[in-house]
Length: 284
Image (tube, rainbow, N blue to C red; front, side, top):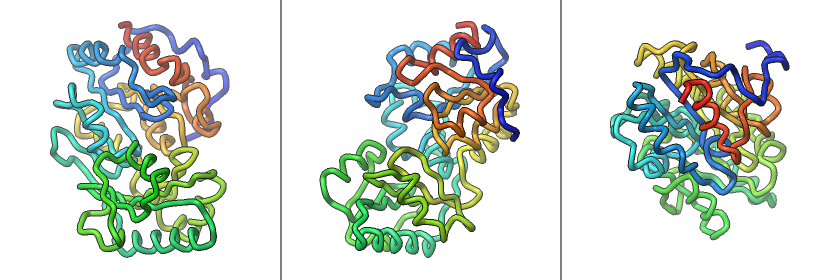
């Protein structure tokens, strides 16, 4: 997709609605959630109104399905969850799509992480399965980060031997994921997705797996066009899904490449940018 002209990036937002939007997809961390990881209280009445209008709201996150379902438990019925950066899509407990990672590849990634740790890197691996996330590292600092994104997680002796469908391997780097861990995974970049999903997170998935692939599949299933789709994101794992929507928004303060790829700029996550933009475009 060509770079977005700067003239299209307008902090006042696009013209006020209502527009013919049938599907709203939003990233969570740095996008819908504020920096304290809180869902804005105004989302709940907005979701009720969107449902009344027949607009589907779908969280799309690197977080696991169980975590997303818990966060939206009060309104989860009928909601589509694009979890694990698009590798696992679920609605009402039924899998709509998934893109499992070959177990031998997952094992190679884990061995790479073990070598990094042996060389002094402060990094840990999370092997993400459909049922749970699996970790070997047991220190509280690492587990606190894991719990934020993976409510269903298990400490095991060997993450390469888990009995589950592995859909991605996530790495948490206490330093800079983009500048430290991601370059160390260069051997996988030619055959798989190595995507920086946050300041401290890198995800390795199949080449075909990303939020955009999941979104396009959902659009086909629902009969919704890109022109009827609104998407919000802030980091590099959101790029492909921004490309799948006519109404694509980068959050103020997003990664520069996300701002370049999006068609519009929304207020920041700390200013309830998703809610304010949806209300403006749909005329709520």
